[in-house]
Amino acid sequence: MNGHVRALAEAARAAQPAIAALSPQRRQRLIERMAERIERDREQVLAANADDTARGEKAGLSTAMLDRLRLDGVRLAAIAQALRELAAQPDPVGAVTRREVRPNGLVIERQRVPLGLIAMIYESRPNVTADAAALCLKAGNAVLLRGGSEARSSNAAIAACLHAALREEGLPEAAVSLLTDPAREHVLELLQLSDLVDLAIPRGGEGLIRFVAEHARVPVVKHYKGVCHLYVDAAADLDLARDLLVDGKASRPGVCNALETLLVHADVAARFLPAAVGALIRRGVEVRGCERTRALCPQAVAADEADYAAEFLDLILAVRVVDDIDDALAHVGRYGSDHTEVIATADPAAAEAFIRGTRSAAVMVNASSRFNDGGELGLGAEIGISTTRLHAYGPMGAESLTIERFVVRGQGQVRHRQSRTAS
Image (cartoon, rainbow, N blue to C red; front, side, top):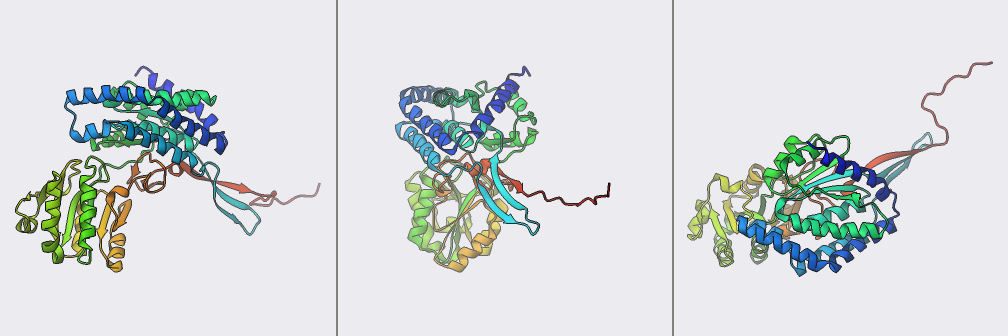
């Protein structure tokens, strides 16, 4: 190890107090300026992304990976809009979440404060460079970004926009640091810096996330994969359920909130599955089903055990007919990944049973799995989706990048009064 990563982390750590000390208005202005710079320099960013995409195609990246990597004018505008929405949100730093007065007169407050320095380790998606930086800064943190080699030009171009905004606001560029060398040993070094890094967040494929979790000496929040289910209940509106299925699977299959498995109550399988499977096949989806599914839909191929545990990230869907809601919940409990579960039903009791019976970070009732996203849930942007049951669970916005501490205000109270002896 040559110390390069430690030097980057030390500089980022030293820059963090300047971000934490900003007023909410200045933090908002900083993030708005970042959005402006991304729009102003859009041609440079898109040119850099075109280089990355061409290199990825030549290297044989999967369709899902290329989709995550690719930027265009619409996606770049969405990045800037997400930053503006985040900038306009309430500032979490210093927020008092609870206040009470104890019998002895002590005023006890719980106050949100920044975590410090966050290491963001991610693959493919260059939008993460902007989202993660803005979220960390909104919460008063500094961030050290390490993107994948497949997006190195895009990440560098976006980071240049962010650095320009920091300079324009008179703030240290090191508050957003980018580790440009993708060598695995640099990630290992970063994960050992327990004296500098307060939290590591991996975002990408299961292999990357397990590597980070297994080697880190710093706290990690993560999700390994998104094996998301749609359960079509006996009381479902079948047209509604079909819409949820098509949107959840076919709209963008290469993302973690896409559906991977469909579970259908036996009482409605004959009415629902033929039309639903036909709609999927027309959109290029390969359907892998159980015996009861294939009896109703001969065009489905046989599913095996591995299919029900798979995060395909592709136009592939596993299907199973279940006897009842308990059977569906047992399947989710066995194969799910605590990410997103969906029920289609018009029965409130069934909806509540499904909510209580799942452990996932998000449960959708008659709504698409694709809504498990920070922007769609009102966070502006997200730094990732946590299925780690720590201080954050589900999509992580700016508030999830702070932590509560106690502030105690008194008037001289002591716990043990000392006796005073006469002089």
